Amino acid sequence: MSFPRYPKYKPSGVEWLGEVPEHWQVDRLKRSVASCKNGTWGDDATGGQDDVVCVRVADFDRRRLQVDLANPTLRSVPVKDRAGRLLAEGDLLLEKSGGGETSPVGFVVRWAHSVPAVCSNFVARLEPAERVSSSYWCYAHAAAYAVGINTRSIKQTSGIQNLDSQQYLDEPFLFPPLAEQRAIAAFLDRETAKIDALIAEQEKLIELLAEKRQAVISHAVTKGLDPAAPMKPSGVEWLGDVPAHWHVIKMKWVARMESGHTPDKKVPAYWEDGSIPWVSLNDTGYLQDHDYIAETAYNVTEIGIANSSAHLLPPRSVVFSRDATIGRCAITTREMAVSQHFIAWVCGDTVVPEYLLLRLRSMSFELERLTTGATLKTIGMPEVRTLVTPLPPRAEQLAIVEYVGSQKLSLDGLLSEAEQAIILLRERRYALISAAVTGQIDVRNAVPETAA
Image 1 (spheres, rainbow, N blue to C red):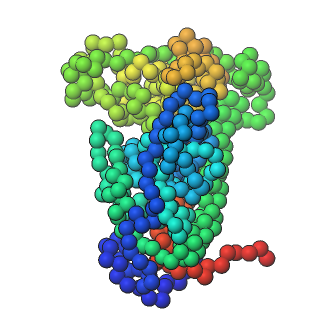
Image 2: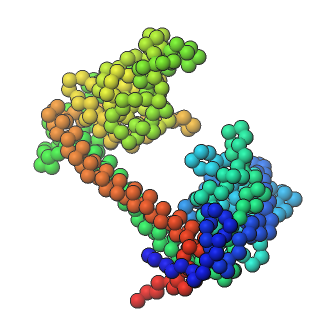
């Protein structure tokens, strides 16, 4: 897509804005705001007539620049505390507190709902001034955020970022005539909706590809590769039928179970300059996307191993998380130890570690059934000892591993393409917003597509 430039430009006097359309004004952001009011957290004793929705930063849909009320938070806010805080359609909500290195505070979304609501104390309500388009200004704030204007107004305290909203509103921006604000907003509404639809298609494709990959693994390690192979009941409800020549056996009989431990964190000699990888919950993010693990977030020393219940495990052990993110697993490539949140399976001669890894990754429903705990989900050791696996001959295990690997390689390539497409579409979205609200393209005559 290409759009014309404006006929004439002038220097804006603002470095990041550069030259801007000649008839646009440069002014402070606060000129677009009638009032800026901090939110309130209210009382959690809900159930009465004072209950209203309290919008949190977690409710910000940062892609669509709006509030997501899929899981609204209700708070009790007396009438006196609602003065100047009840949200009206078109209000802009400014993130004042929270944030982090990768997502600093200062993001703005638009309120487009009609339910009674206030902002939380981490959010400020920006009431649009008269004769401005709140839709345009929502996009304008998004462009400002993308170039980091907000970071100049961030005050860091106690690990939580706080935005000085008045300092932020003193930042300069562009004020097109109201008619152009509306035209730009309408244009961006249309074009970003198209981009969002394309992103949604790619996200659905990623979901389907992930399901396909899981189905390939589950079918191969449960039914084998020969569709004509005679089948027999496994005797295990969740497994169903398996090839007649396979055994169904408890995992503990084909791989030695080893539990883990954490050496005392208060003893520096157990950890300082440690060279032994120690698999813990800090590594579960890595395990999600990798079949093998060579390095860990923390290392222990030989003294730490000697003075704890942790064991030094041989290479090609299968480590498996049984707490929190249950079922994350990988094969070690060197001697390691694990924390008490993990189990290690040291494979015997009858099972290939890669096959056991696939088996564990195909058992999500069974693992979920065995899980206990509301806050910290876990699978107890007695439940782990009940896990069973279909066991083909070793040569067939190797063939299954090779087949699944080739299928995953193909599917992972498609997944990578879809993920890259989403990245490019999001970049396109923000580039289009920035170009439109800074006057680098002229969309006044952009005509919506009509059906033939």
